[in-house]
Length: 402
Image 1 (cartoon, one colour):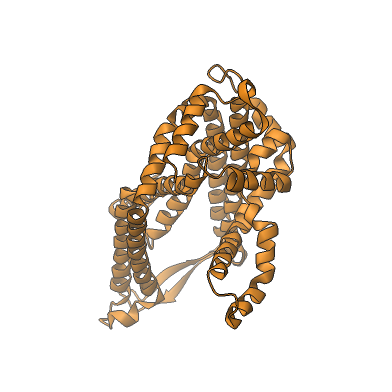
Image 2 (cartoon, one colour):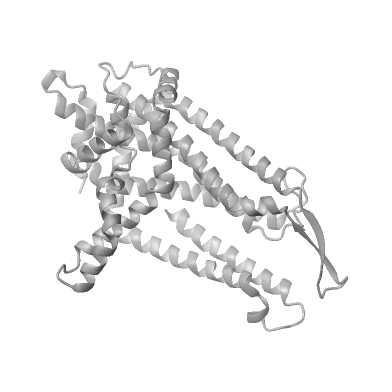
């Protein structure tokens, strides 16, 4: 979290540097710097203030929720033995990294190949030689470039979803075994089962996470706002009537979108809708005090860790581009217009790659919570699959959750 706050300031400084470079490049006739910079300079200046404000908000949020975040990190320390038990999940991470590399290089190859059929034009410019070269990709590539990024994002989401299903298989098989210390997880069998029998469920979850998760968050915010205002006001009734279709859709479908459904899918073979509803009522209502109260802070800590690694990787690439003349592949990078583009590409790519590395931490914690809840509802006494170490772990969680 400290690294994130420092990185916000560094990225803001990078945006300010790009703002100054844009002005110095375009104001060659001594014009007013506030006029000749254009939209590009204004954009970089706006981004500079955005990152500074985000850093302040991030710091304020950490200070406000400091005790809860501290308790969540304490639960992480208590959970280390779980990660050591399910060590076979490293093969799932390796497969995910391979798939991510294939998607990334295929995307780069496709983009470069599609844009290489362009033209190099000379345009008038009031500089020393009177002309400057401008590269324009072909029309077909420019027409469809807006859809390339969402498709790559969907591909990354699909890979992460199928890895989460395999991790859920591993956690459930480990938890519902009598000798957990000696349990050996047949990871290859889990991969085959996930791909053969549950590929449709994974596709559905990936599409919902890709296209509907943002709508769900908006609907949740609208519902929370409407519950806090007076219902007898005319403007409140107008808002309710306006957003009633969205709120109805949220109550029937959107609020159940979660990776918690994967545990029920692995255990019972349910389809996505039934598994999602089972996971929702199990975790959000009947057993919300058994670790689920800190789940949002667990996600915040994991996301902060992923952002810190991704921002640092992007900062390294940006520093390389502005200090070196050639890339590691001996490509001349002095002709590059701005180093922000490789920075953004590195940041987005690393964000998905780090999701694969942090995926076991998330799924083991979620899966263990849900398996414990299922075990407590289905079995009693010596029939239960919760060993002494696990019971002690959950007792500790109950004592420190809020």
